[in-house]
Structure formats: C-alpha cells, structure tokens
Amino acid sequence: MYGLSMADAFASKEKGCLKCLVLMFLSAVTVCQKNSWDIVIRGEIGKTVMLPCIHKAVPKERQGNVMIYWQTEDDDVVHEFSKGKEGLQYLGEAYKNRTIIFTDQLEKGNFSVQIAPVRHTDANVYICYFNDARSSMLNPCTVKLEVTASFTDPSINLGPCWKTGEQVERNVSCISNGGYPKPQVHWSIQNGETLVHPQGETNFTQDPDSGLYIVDSQVTVNFTEGLTISCSIENQKTGENKTSSLRGCLTAVPPGSPVGILVGAACIIVLVMTGFFVWIVVSIKRNQRNEQQNTALNEVTGNRDTNQLNAVSEDQQSSHRVVIQELGEKGNEEGLPLNKTENNQVESVTLSTQVYMFPS
Image 1 (spheres, rainbow, N blue to C red):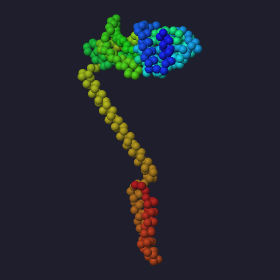
Image 2: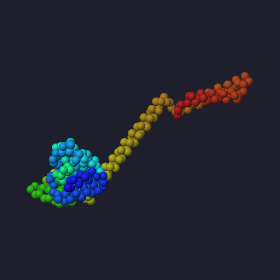
Image 3: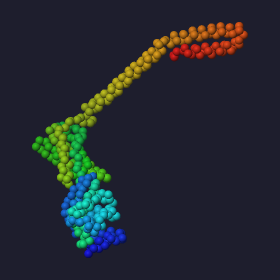
Image 4: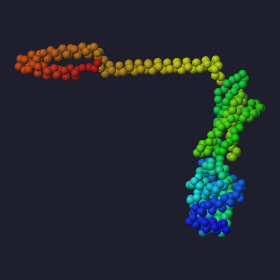
C-alpha cells in the first residue's frame, strides 16, 4: 500500500506535499531501525568514502519505475534516484554536488552511494530505501559513518631547565595536529625501572572549517640525565597511537642568579664591541673610496695643480688685454669705431678663454 502511494506521489505535481509524505514515512521506518545498522564505515576527512548497499538487481527496463533514496538518521536527504534519473530538488544543502550512485551498477543490485570530500559533519547513520512500484518500501541497508583523520607525530618541546639541588624541573609540551576526533593524550616518564604517568594539562583547538584538531598538552617534571619522557597521541577511532620520546636534560642557569647576571652582561659587552668594530670597518672603507675618487680625478685632469691652472689663466688674460689694446689702436688708425672693435674682440677673446679653462 505504501509502495503504490509512494509511486503515485512521485508522479504527482504537488512536490511540496510529496516531501512531507516521504519524510514522514521514512522517519517512521527510521524509528524501527533506531540504534541498528548493518555495517560501520570509516571515512577520512578530505577524501572519498563509499556507503555500501547491495540489494536485488534492477534491469534497465525496470529502472524507470524504481526509487532509491538515501537519507540520514535525522531526515537529511543525501541522494535520490527516481524514474530513471537522479533528483536534486530535495537534497540537503550539505550534500549538494557531493554524492553519486552508480546507475550502471543497478543491474547488479549495487545501490551504494559515494560521498566526497568527506567532512567532519558527515558522521551519522545513513539509511537506504528502495521501491520498485511492485511492493512496499524496503530498507535494504543502514550504514554508520565514522569520520576520522590521522594526527601528526607528536612534537615534544622543552622549556627552560632550572636546576635546584640534584633535581631539574622543566616544562615539557607535546603538540600534534591535523586529526579527528579528539584524541587521548598519555604521558610517561621512565627513570631506570621506575615508570610514572603524570597527568598533563591538555588543550584542544578545532579548525572551524575542516573540523581538524590541534592538540597541545603540557606537563612539569623533574627532568634529569638518564630519564626518558614520552608523549602518545591515541586516536581511538582509527586505532592509531603515535608516540615521541626524549632522553636527558641540559642544565641551564636559573634567572636572577649571579652567574645569570654575569652571562647577560657579557652578552651586552659582546654586542657593543661588535657594533664598534663594524663602525671602524665602514669608516675605513669610506676613506679608501674617497682616496680612489681623488686619484681618478687627478688622472682625468692630467695631474695639473690648481694653482698652476690659475696662474696660466691670469697670464692668458694679460696676453688678451695686450691684444685688445693693439687691435683698438689699429682700429682708430683705420677710422673704425673703437667700442665696436673692442666689443667684438672682447667677446671673441672671452669665448677663447672659456675653451682653455680647466676644471678646478
């Protein structure tokens, strides 16, 4: 009865009412299947996962009459195949463009659905429904999807090491990232045959987009030579347990001690002396560069002395004055205007003088 009404409903144009009927019916079936699934599948975040479902074969000539419907336990539509084609109208926003079924495998009874890429929000129970218009709605498969991601190998970082008597206290941190879900963090300290498991303070930070976790765990221990400290990141979903270890400790000087103050003062003196040395080197190079420039300038001017150039210039000017006077007197004898002759000769001589001037 339900199967026939569902077939008629899918043929109806009243799509809004159809969705209500489908979800009400499938929810009723889900209640019967609550806390029950056929198989558990693990999907890794960012990769592809297949939710398997093998039922009876559907010949091609019958595929136009069947409905294969995947939904989550909380009624979110994952994938729909109806009347020989895949439907998109009722898909949940979280699953649009992320799911496919293999229509060429329906003849073999393969109703599996593929989800890609896997998100941390995909962890859920998925239910497959099937109807071929000949019988009531069937629930051939129920699959639980567990979402996981592997954590990186833990990195152990050592804080400052202060020696008090024979003991050395040290802050130790253990960092790992890129995993899902939250892991278990285990510390262990071994000194000879003695093995202890201190309780660290662990913080988890989750990326809002990928959902992956960053783990930062810290512990304070008496860390001495011959002691080994280990940090383990256990992902219970994947069964992975990644461990890193460190052995021994370098003793440092505690802050505020006389030795510590002397070490700090020595560092400051070294820095000051280094700066002074650099200043001397820069000054020497600057002086060498200036000397090279002066040498090059002397080579260009033919090594002439500036005083000699000035003396030559004065002799030339005296010579020019004599020439001007003689030309002026000759101009008077010939009845030429004295001012004109002098002006002409002065301009000519001035130009000639500028030609022979040397740069100072």
